[in-house]
Length: 477
Image (tube, rainbow, N blue to C red; front, side, top):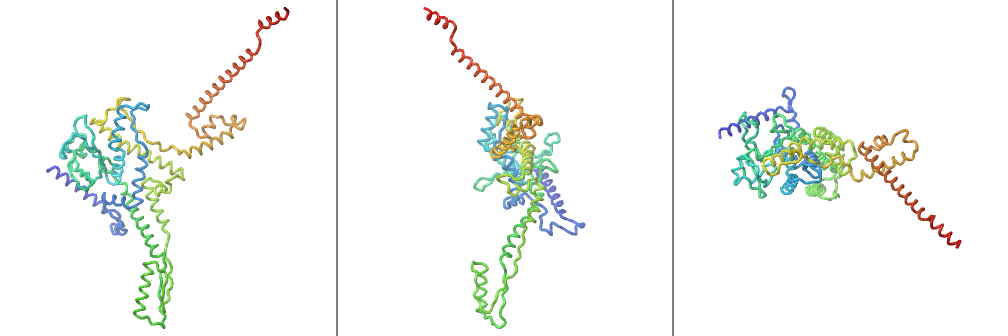
């Protein structure tokens, strides 16, 4: 109890330090000007701030969701060998992934990791009989995984760290306080040993256990977008419809009844669909409209968000959902996702999860290829069927023009034309040469067979010499 209290004090001290640092954000002129206070920015941000921003704002949701949806797009295959044979390890993984919907858990973990400083997967092994036993370490190599839960940093808090300097996990989380909620809203909090937790961090700075929320660096820009888009809507509501200035004729006396009637008409004009005034002695003059286009201001904020997150502007705003009009944006985006797959999703989520399952007997150990397995993702750089048809048509047209020139091969050899002008890879060029050679051999064999068949037919048509002699003898007799 004393150790836990000391660690809680240590955590509290760290939080206080972070709040003090946050209080210095936006200060200029030796602290005389606080930009964050003037502009209405919140200095100290928590998980709930990021979660609510993601839940309610479109661009915030796109920043979190679009890289995640593209990263995990397509089938997730774990292969022990490259051939068609299905090994026991591969079969066990497919059954586990299908039964427990592992991929959806990975996606939720990725989202929680991005919204907060870390996210976790909680392993529900069958080695416990009550919730109090979750505090013990997982034992044995013949366990079964009953369920997996993805949790955020609020529902899974570190309450105890490893203090043994001789332990390889010195300074790492040892015990977590986990809160599990059911569909009815009821919850249960329990202490959980680190062997039952997969702790994932994105972009760590101070240590390996706490990362940087993906919305933190652009949070102010998201607030600015709220001001611009919300303010422009309010500006249009107030300024697009013209205001009116009522002038009473100096010679006309406006009675109390007339004032009440005029006020009622104005209320109906303002809040209902009525657009006609009936009045006497009062003239209405239209005021100038005051509406400006916020597009340029919004573009500046989007551009800055795109620069920090690495998400191309067109993809962030959803203007290229169907077909990318910018090949450069597509290539940059695919390269970004490929790096994210290799350095984050595979390295920090998929492989650690599989290794835990192998360690505790949920999955069998890979036996082929010295126990090495690979993670197969959907190809990001493959082109669509429509693009394949268009590219094939252009290549065919270029090849037709090349073949129509009798001396074209003297200027550009066929292999160079295939690689430099048609954009084929050396392996594809080699395959074409092999297929062409085989086709020529088949054509020569067919031609030789046709010649042999023709000679055989000629031999059958010619009479034999013995038959001719016998016929002559018969004639003489």
